[in-house]
Length: 139
Image (tube, rainbow, N blue to C red; front, side, top):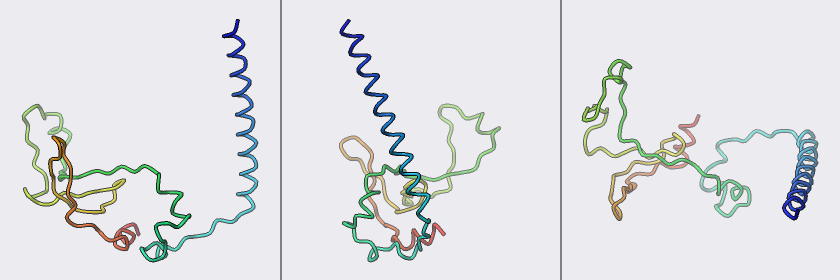
């Protein structure tokens, strides 16, 4: 009988949480409707404009992003793709020894070389693209 009582209390608590969340959301929509969107000039986004400890920047510092390393790429016809099997070799557009591209969410931010750390691969950054250059590439 206590399990049923606990379940009823949990459901009532969840219903209260949902009601509070819906009320909060409705209030937030009213607030945002009264505010106008302000355009942001990308020239403002440079090292000097926003210090690292700025509260505006603190909001985004914990957002996860995908960091990837690109060895190279190539275009291949679907016919050839379907013929690939174990041991097949695909030629890439990079010369051996050329630095890898380091990308964050698909945007190039640096170049680097592969290293091995404790039996795992890593990358040593050899050239980091400046924030100003990254912003220019976004445009």
